[in-house]
Length: 263
Length: 98
Length: 196
Image (cartoon, rainbow over all chains, first blue to last red; front, side):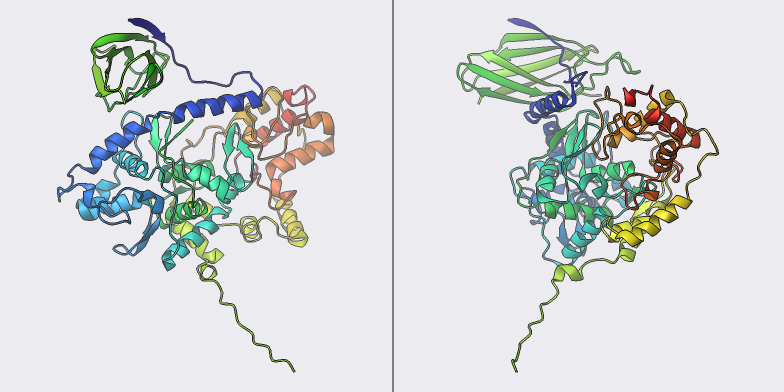
């Protein structure tokens, strides 16, 4: 019988020069990728997916994420997309809200009461998202642009990416429109080009170690706009879905590798 | 916070068994203003026999991931990992070596 | 006479789906809401933002000059004493606080300088979105004109480069006059870590 004393500490770049710090961060990220708490969110999400809820007392198992009722495998890789029943382009979180309200009969007020959780209590949305995206692992990103509304969504998203506004005159492109830039020590993917979009979009949603939480795409956009000094975007609004659509299409072809793990 | 989900993978290598466990736990340390709540010990059993008993310090992060490499082992071996925290709460998980 | 058959190339469906700048702005006004210290109107574009957006930050020499002249008019240069305290300046350069929809009103804002720039050599956590400012005062000296330039640039960077990505820190109300003076000192004072 072995007795071991564990004192696991996060690898922190100390007084090392910037290049060494970068290597340490890469090592740390590799370690995280090989077994992430995100898998626990997937487990919990799967249980919630199968749980009967709401006035209709049904689970999400008949929820149509674009590939037909209840088909989850590969569905996230084909979002955002146009849905006939709502006559809208929807992303994953928007579609989950649709299933909560139409399938399960929950009110929109209840369904949106607590969309972002915290470290002590994740939200239902975060668990569900982790499960659904995990079921697209390995699938190639293939958000469609065949329907007229899908094309319009993509074009709107592209315009939004370059739209300069807010008190600091930022657009998404201010940080994500050039190659090989970083903010402090955080590398910034160039999201307007396939290589950068693929790397980023295939690893979000993600478990954020520094927050001990699973962060979704809607959260990611919300927090970007916050740091851009914009007002707050409406959750699952046409604007946020369009921007996601632009990212998803720019990332097309790359195999999905989420939910990811981030600093 | 009640014990959250746990997940374990045990894979056979050449002469060893790699075990990876994901745990849910707040690991609230003396650094926060909240009452201390952290895992104090982790026990690993191989086919019912205790092979690792680890004393965990407060320096471990929330929702920790533990990796162990055990000597030997064979496919189908029963690996059980359990933890006990300072409040007396515990959880365990069992899996077969793949 | 040659008969030429022109085949009109159909405008690609994608191009038809493009929203106009006005439509994009309206969608922003509809889908963003005020929160904390940030007003909803912040998503409506002013001239600089609109022109830079539609020209992909390359408005052409003439329009750039006009924009820069307009922006220069907004700068309130202090009557005297443009150099403040570099020690306070360092704190301001390090701080990323302020102007977001989760910032509490009334707390002092920072300049977020290290987010984009290298400054003091000893600080390795710096961004690369803007040029390195390491040794700035050492290279340019700390004369009146340089102080004026640095103050103006921090107050309203668009007065010097119409579509600069640098926020207009004075004009937007992010930093006070004293804070900008302290940053001028951080950049130009020979004793500042930026110039070691």
